[in-house]
Amino acid sequence: MNPELGTIKTVLMRSYDGLPYHLKSCFLYMPIFPEDYRVGRGRLVRRWTAEGYSREVRGKSAVQIADSYFMELMSRSMILPSEKSIHSTKGIDSCQVHDLIREIGISKSMEENLVFTLEEGCISNSQATVRHLAINGNWKGDKSEFESIVDMLRLRSLTVFGQWKSFFISDKMSMLRVLDLEDTKDLRHHHLKHIWKLLHLRYLSLRACPTIFDLPDSLGNLRQLETLDVRGTGILKLPKSIIKLQKLNHLRAGIIPAYEDFVSWEQAVGHIPKVMKCRPCTLLLGTMLCCLACFAPESFLGDGMSHRDVCAMFCCCILPILATRLDAHGVLVPSGMTKLKALHTLGVVNIGRGKVILQDIKGLTRLRKLGVTGVNKENGQELCSAIVGLRHLESLSIRSEGEPGLSGCFDGMSSPPENLQSLKLYGNLVKLPEWIQELKHLVKLKLRNSTISEHDAAIQVIGNLPNLTFLHLLEKSFKGEEVCLSLLPGTFVRLMVLELRPTLKCLKFEQGAACKLELLKFRFADINNESLLGLPSLASLKEVVLQ
Image (cartoon, rainbow, N blue to C red):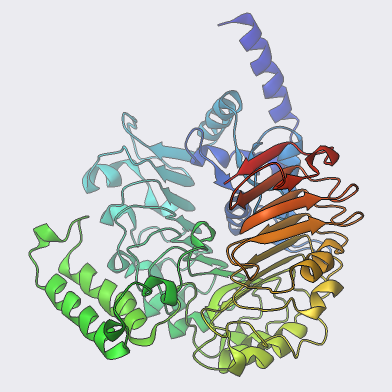
């Protein structure tokens, strides 16, 4: 061995030995994830919580305590930031483990029978009595080999990367707490029919599994469930039994953030002849496609889909969207959600089919993060009333498609939640709500399709928000084809990231504006010497991205 490498490993081992017990448990969890894999901060923190690695302490939730463990491991360089996200108020969205540190983690976790990875070339002479099983996409074994290697009775977590196989879940996994199937390929809704038998399950993620269109009603039997993440699936409606999950504190559904800019119904059908845009025509077309697909030879279906899968896709996803023009960015939820008193995170919920859900949201007083879609003038006032009562709310996302969009929806907002740190408004506003200037703790603001007409006045209000760090003005934030923006002296005093997607005619930074700006992303209609002014005054600027 290289002497220098040996010295480095010795130092790293001392760093590991110096970790307190609670941090060792968290660190030895990392070998679950493949080499160079980016692990989402929230995903990791909620998994640690589900494993019981953190507890509520002096008013801080178990998730908050686990998040402090994440930052402590980061400060000790046991995990490393994989990126400084421009989408996060926290700055660090994900982490990775250095190869040498990962070797230590793998060695120690194997010594303590914590983590075993099923992958190509793995060898196990007897059943692995481990707590955490990870299955790599390159493992090609069959059911008998799987059962001979894995002692299912002792498993606490199962994580699958890559290709799904139906025998990966068994009712013998009676002690399983974490089932993480994020981004698993070829997972179907009928593979989950026995999931209700995993009575100790606390964490369930089906995120980015687009071939999941439905959740079994038996999901309500998972009374210990704390996290349910079905973002990026084809699920448009949650089962009624979900209101039985009274320990649930994190519920995410709808389109994942990477696809937030997914087109609206109006944009999707914009190029279709007018006669085909009426509901009977679109429904008839969808029904015909469904019949053709359901009776087509399976060799034509592709991606390993069966007729059952195709029928589920059309009945649970495509036909509801065509028949009701349902906004796929959110999900419909049953009445009675107010029973889920432990909820801290809820979204994205479609509130466009009735006002009962708004009364339920009003009763979820512990909410810290809320996302809704389907907002209109009929339910706008009730939404404002519900939001005003959520005093712990830190993150709010509101979306409305088409006309009139969000225009006039916030007129009844007397006083916004004072602790709000992140605000996303997607939809036609026309003018900036007056209460935005009261958000003294706001760190992140994102607007899209807001078509604000008074550009200068809006920029002045936004620029005076004392803690604003991330500003994303996306497509059609301002009315007009070509927009001129000027940032005045003494404004945007803490802004670090500025993203501008309206087609700009000119952008000017006055001396003393945005003095802490590090990243600037923008789009110009026609760039020239007069398009971008004042860049030399931005002493902290590190990166400029011209789109």
